[in-house]
Structures are given as C-alpha cells and as structure tokens.
Length: 166
Image (cartoon, rainbow, N blue to C red; front, side, top):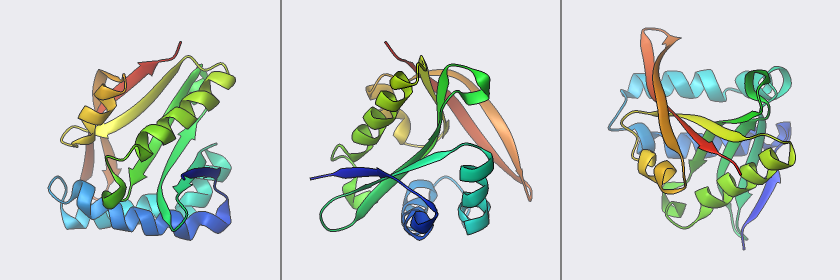
C-alpha cells in the first residue's frame, strides 16, 4: 500500500537521497555530469530545500510503501498570484516508475489544488525528458517553452506544460 505524506525539514535527507538516485537515470543522457551535480547542489542542498519551503511556499510530498520511500513531488499553490498550482518537482525511483506512483502524486496535488480553488496545474520539463509522454498521457499539454539560465554556464531548456482542472 502506498502512503503519501507532507514532508518537513526532518525529511530533507530522504528527498536528497531520492534526488541523487533518480537524477543520473533521468538526466544522464540529456545533461553533463557537471550540470547534474551543479543542479543537485543548487536545488537539493539543505539550505536550498529550506529556502524553497520557507521563503518560496513550496510544499513537498513524499510517497512510500511498506518498505521504503519511492519518490517525492513539490508544488506551490496560487503560483505567481494566479489560481494555478505549479509542480516544481516530481521524481520517482527508477525501479518504481511505471507502477502508478507518479500518477498518485499528481492526483494528490490535483486534489489539493482543487480544494484551494486552483484551476490548472503547470510544470516545466526538459525538452528531451522521456516524462513528456507521461505528462501528455495524464492530460498535460505543451503551452510554451523557455530557456532558464541557472548560472555557471548552464541552461535549462524546458517545455512548459499545463493541465486544466475541472
């Protein structure tokens, strides 16, 4: 049975561990090892996670089964003052992908968004990420693209995808 719970600062090591296990598999053929390491440090250091949850209103959800933690997501309600929920992160351990874990996290975020009167979900995804098909399959559509300079000479080349909520 899968359980989803809202993470707090004591869960940062779990989030960091999953990130370090999923990112090489997710981005190993897309990004250089240097960029992966840079981004992991930039987004998943304890200070970075604290900044996201304390100053940027990100909420983290962690999903686990009876044995171990399988993945996490982070989201922000009312993104940029709009009735939109931004999914900032969603990562599932490679061995648990394709088993409904990601769909369950998205459904949980959808339910939270709707309870808070948000009318859409939005996320960014690397243009070469195979997860694009997953997002399309659950109702997300490409609505744009952007290049984000993240420093140190690295660029994130993303599609912006959205899903309208009923």
